[in-house]
Image (tube, rainbow, N blue to C red):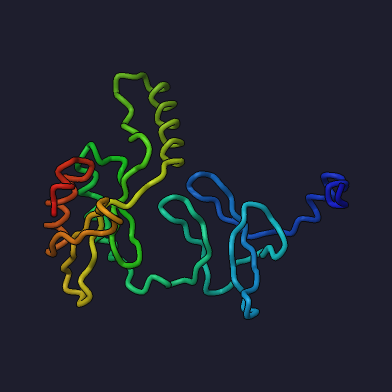
Length: 209
């Protein structure tokens, strides 16, 4: 038995250093740590338990990031060289919300693009209004927990033109051969969103090219 394991619980808790932490959408907590690269430069990472190199504060210029699937990491601030305009992201999210069969889909920025993700598990549907208030609340809470555990896969994206003209290129995920992104057509974001988002989750999407 190690010395640490043989210590009284209170003493063990006092021996654990304070660590800056982040809790993701699933409720999992990650603690900030510092390590070293092969060249001796500092690198920052997260771990599910506090260990050697735990840090009590985030270094200047860095921040926690969380992916669409709840993966937590440490990145430099402002690494998104071409951030997605908030109005453009909202436009895509609003179009998704217009279609009942897409309520579980999500849109999020990724390296300057607007990516639409589909749920990998069963789609969580809204609570029927026929249930009583207390029952609806319990169902809603259960669905929120289910959504928090949901995994997502990219299925569509809108790529902005490099000249900042407001034109986007629509691209869908292809599953033929080695897979990858298949470019469809360019146009204004509003027109592309209206034309293509309604096809997500249907066989019609895969008739495109």
